[in-house]
Length: 167
Image (cartoon, rainbow, N blue to C red; front, side):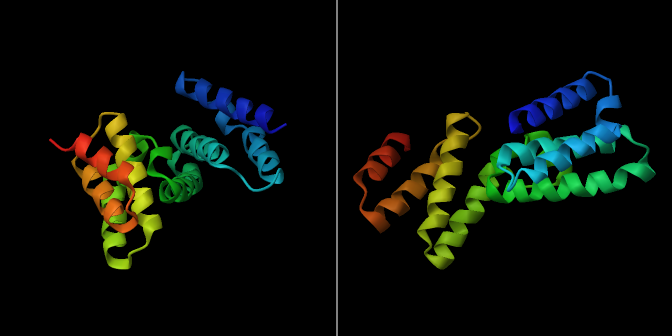
């Protein structure tokens, strides 16, 4: 059931991207969202699709009718960004003025330095690592964060990885 609903949303969003907005502005599009919500707590993939649908509706509707969809899309994308900035496409992050994964990781690193919460450091490392893997950043920040975690936990693998990244 859920997969069918997500596939239908994907198809409507794709048709909009190809120039046919009828599938995102008709009443059935919102009925799909309601059905999806009735299935229980949404996962990130569902929220990404619903946010995209609302952003498509905003783009397709006259400005006076699309404002609600814009606010809904923004609220969903902000929530997704808080969970993991990589869930929000770069052009959407830019549109809504959201931080890049690298900037979010730096903020988490500063938060770790203030609070000492290992969870913040782990999340920062995860974001830095993904940026390096996708070649959007060098490994300098990742190496520094790994060294911090090594100092805290004594994990040799962190020190080894940091040494491999350092120039």
